[in-house]
Length: 386
Ligand code: GLA
Image 1 (cartoon, rainbow, N blue to C red):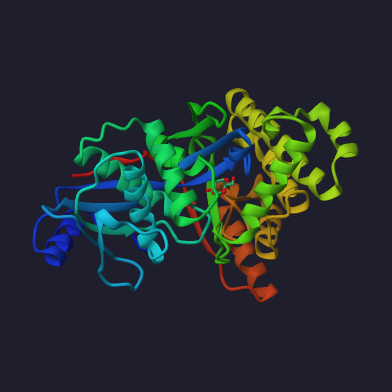
Image 2: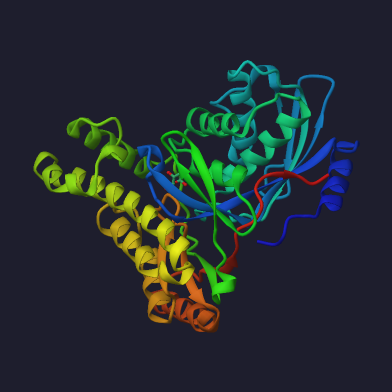
């Protein structure tokens, strides 16, 4: 995807679409998750970072309750709605994300005025890089400021989760919006999803002679579809049978006993979550002691666990990981909710070209559509641009 229009260009497009200047322009990034997959809704640990691809939104408050929404992507044209009558059932396409945020604000008793909204984004959609949360976080950051709602970041995290869960209909957790709102240049966000406490952790791949490659398989996924919810349900069943509040409370040493109490499938789902939580802590430790070059084997183990135990990978993701690893990546794993989307491959700069070529070649040989391969680095979280 091309860069979204710069601030001036977005404001100019807004002016020509709506006939007035916007009140301001905000931006919020997508994310990759370094490690900690499907652990957030199990009250576990995650370690994502905000990336240098973002959604941008130009907004103006209107004197009436009309909402007019336009984007530079999608082919929907202008959508009109009424802030006084937001309806979960009728929102279509990308408009679900901004409208879901406005609805979630209303659920909190906050007044939502009429608005003109123009959105742009270079976070690829359906690629597992959190394009929807980038939009939601840009919109909520804008609204929080424009309406002086006074929400703290933690409340914005919960409001966007409510938008996703109850308006969009995707039963997702809190990782993506936390990364988008709390991210910082050069840092990953270590988040304890039980109490939402967090800590920024330096992740400087470049200084270690590495790049983080994203391999977008172009296999599109949706977390409103059944697979994500089914994994969540398995985790809930597992914690119920094991008598814990959440799978966060199951330790590695408990797994042997859990195997005897759970059916095989539920046990493997549980084992993924328990071992993945452990891998987040391992990477945290390794980043502090040895640096990014040491984390490769843990990334590989995470991918194997998602492929074999949690069963959320697909042929394209497995091939991307395999090809990247055999061409010199230090470690690779699918990132995000799964069932398509992207893999990340931590790659020495010197091997970057051969890794890209090997993945492209392997996709061609397998008859898969060409992947999109690009580098990402930890970038700033949501902010006002103008
Ligand atoms: C999606 C969800 C997140 C998280 C990941 C899996 O990105 O939005 O809340 O559950 O999947 O780790």
